[in-house]
Amino acid sequence: MMHRSFVSVRETALFIAGDSGGPDTKSELEIGDWILQKLSHVKYTWPQPFNLNLVSHYSRSDGFKVCVESALNLPWCAFPMGICTLCPPAAVYQGPPWLAHDRPNFIQCLVLNSSYSAPQWADGYMSFHQRVYHKYMTAIIHLYAVSVVPIEASEHMHDSNDNQKIEFSLKLGQQCWTAVPTFTHGYCNTGRYQLPLFTGTPSQKVLSALRNGKCKHVLKGLLHNNEVQLLSGASVFVRVADGRRHQELEQPAAKDAQRSFLHFLKAEDPLKLTSTPPLHQLIPESLRSQSEVFSRQLATQFKQVVHQDLGYQSLNREALKPMGPVSDGLLFKV
Image (cartoon, rainbow, N blue to C red; front, side, top):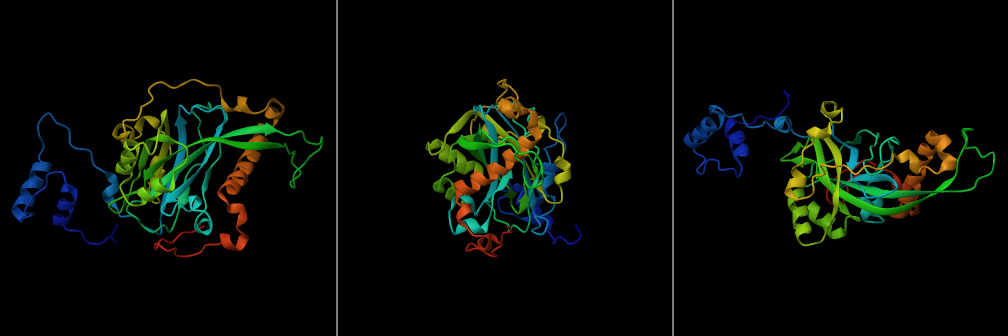
């Protein structure tokens, strides 16, 4: 904290005031009166909430982290898995040669005892180090409905580690996505959020709008213009944390999640959860006795299918190495 740059009380007051009716002429007297008004205790009132995110500026060397915890009211009778990527650059949606600039982080470690309408994931935090600050940067969470089709295999099939191997193929079905802003005024948006989900995949027009405007207002405009559609009643719980503060949010607590996105976009806040069977019942009966092996292979094959779907299979190993600064000045580690 001692290495932070000096910020005066005047700068801080004007920053906090923003568009909320702060001093007009910005004179010493008016700033002093405004501070006194805001800090004076009024009887029978509670103090305004204090945003702990505005304590220390984002540090590129520490980066930030994103964790996708769980979802509510997904309409799919399938294994919900997904990817998380940042916009900008949203490289996974740009095709070659942009694919080589960034690779998706996978949401794949399903808690098989959770239901398929309210799945939970145990992947934990995905770390984004050395990401150059961009005031409109968002984390895109993209979920897939994954169906499993068993394949008749030979009686004694083993993998390279001499573990019993089971065979099945995957089919990617319906998809949905959402976005959460990672920064505010140079600070990381550390917090737990309940976010509405949108049907399909984010289009190039949507990604371009998110690169150039505030996430909430962009999504509201797109929704108003019918360019995105809400997945009715469905939402996802996501944690965003400064790389130095992620331990503050280690324990999931859905009741503490910020619901401002739901209210702002007038999305349904699901008070009632649709009850569905646990995910392990979706495992083909012939494979249920090997649920742990199945879970590992499901994650492996999901990566392969998504890489193929996005076009990563066409890139050679050399092209997937870190490439340094990209055209918009952002440096990424692959």
